[in-house]
Image 1: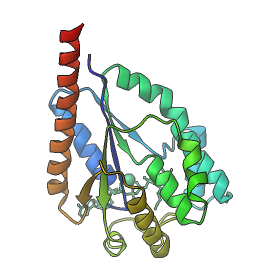
Image 2: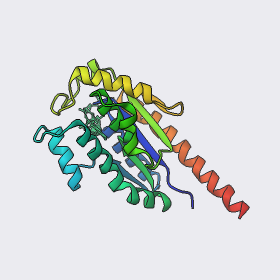
Image 3: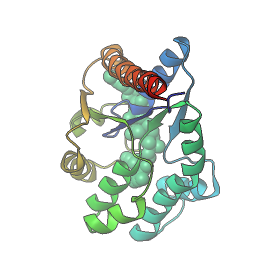
Length: 207
Ligand code: Z5A
Ligand code: MG
């Protein structure tokens, strides 16, 4: 059996990551694939509740402390994610370590220091980056309710995301319609999943 594929959606605030993750999961399920959604921060765990209190301004924490909590929130999910991938389940992931590094570095923490706690996490097979100018993000629902939703910080975060981006990232213009973005993302994700199935089949022939 082919290992599941880890499909990550990263990007700017309000770029439509959660909307697109939900649509991708639904479309893959409809096509008969085993697929699950993971979201970071995962606010339901004990660590996630601390992160939620910080983001909603109910709790103050040092920049270093919240950075490590975001990373710990990924590490506490890692074994379960690896097991799913081994079982052949595809994971659609809403934000990951790139958000962790971009937001903390935008606040002024050292870039290498920011990267270190996430070293060793399972690597995505496919990363989409949903890019949206801050001026457009501000017009969208809910912007400004949480701690980081301020123009100057968002500009820095966007700049850092562009610095972090790998050559293999698939850039998606988040000014496009929800449907147009979905079609691009679904097609590319299906190609990646098909590639995995082909690899598994050629593996079987050699055994
Ligand atoms: N953070 C961090 O600091 N360190 C970390 O390690 C991690 C995260 C993992 C909360 O994240 C904060 O945590 C976030 C980064 C930081 N801080 N900020 N800012 P979150 O993932 O929980 O944030 P969120 O509340 O889900 O918001 P979001 O991710 O920024 O939004 P989104 O998922 O990209 O967008 P959406 O919810 O799908 O859509 C937003 C609105 O736009 C909604 O009204 C939609 O109907 C509309 N929308 C969506 N797509 C479109 C298109 N194509 N056109 C027009 N309108 C659209
Ligand atoms: Mg979201």
